[in-house]
Each structure stands twice: as C-alpha cells, then as structure tokens.
Image 1: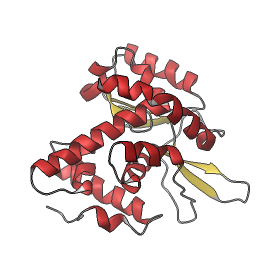
Image 2: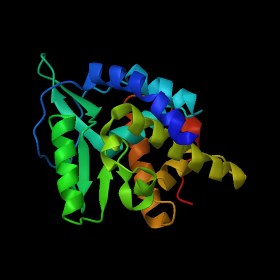
Image 3: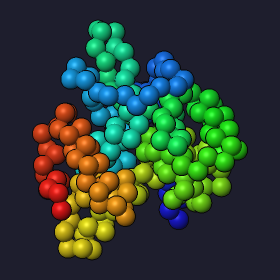
Image 4: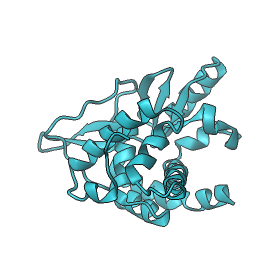
Length: 212
C-alpha cells in the first residue's frame, strides 16, 4: 500500500522538481559547502509532499538540502543551493550526475561492483537499510518517488518521538540519518537545523535542538 501511494505521487513531484533542478551539472563533484551568498528557495513540490505526510515543509526541505545539495550558478552571478535529484553516495564519496540516465548507469555499475554502502537520490535513501523494498534500485532516482519515500521515513521517525511522549521533529531528523547512534544523530540534526535557519525564522517551532 505504501509503495502504491509513493508511485501515485511520483509524476507530480517530477514535474515540479524539474522546473527547479534543470540546469547544467558536473558529472562528479565533492559535497558542496554552502556560502552566505547562496540563494535558498523551497519549491512547491517539497511543500506539497511534506504536507501530505504531516511534516513541516521547512524541516523536510532542510533535510533534503543536507542530503543532496548542489550549487548552481544564477544569471546575476549569485549561486543557488538546491537538492540535486541525481546524487549518489558510494562508500562515503558523493557523485553528482548531469542526468537521470547517467546516474542510472553509474548506480548499476556500483551495484555490480559489489559496493555495499550506497545512498541514492534527493533523500539519499540508504540501500543497505531500504534497498530490499525496491526490486529495481534505480527507481530511487525518480525525484517524486524518492521524496515520497523520504517523507514516509521522516514521518515514521516523528511517530517514534510521539510514542516516546516527546514529540520533536529535530529528533526525528536525527533518526532519519541514523536511528541507532545518538552520537551521529545529534550533530546531523544540528546541521539540518542550521540549514533551516538560513532561510526560515520558524525552525525553533518544531522542537528543541538540545543535546539529549
């Protein structure tokens, strides 16, 4: 049922994301370190998918920016930071591809070479944990489907905080990155929170960022 819902929402996500993400990209790049002059704007696709899953859009978009951000040049000389749909992380190295087809070819090659630690797409879906749900792993390079599944994971982690009696979206964000290691979850959620603060004044409304 979950996968049917995800596939149903895929087409809209693709159309809205391509309107923002279609630009030239280098085939291989290191993770981008954003600078102060980067422009950050949240596309409607992220807002819609976040609300469909009951997630504050600022939280969802900030996670996606942290997972797969890429700088693109604007005509006025400034740079814009966006989540890039054809991003792979393989054995802790990030790769950014010009197109879905190039990313698909690379993903198949990485899988054939028996690489174990692979994360895919906008939400960097980690194949060792979630790959068994996708017979064809390359479908995670479809932007809409990837966002739908990422939203599902984030919402499930927030539900965990509810079950603990301490609802907190930032704790859910840390668990999205790693649910079993607090030493990794805390700095991750702090990083996402700082990214959120760069374009929104509402970040504090979604829970405490305190180290606990």
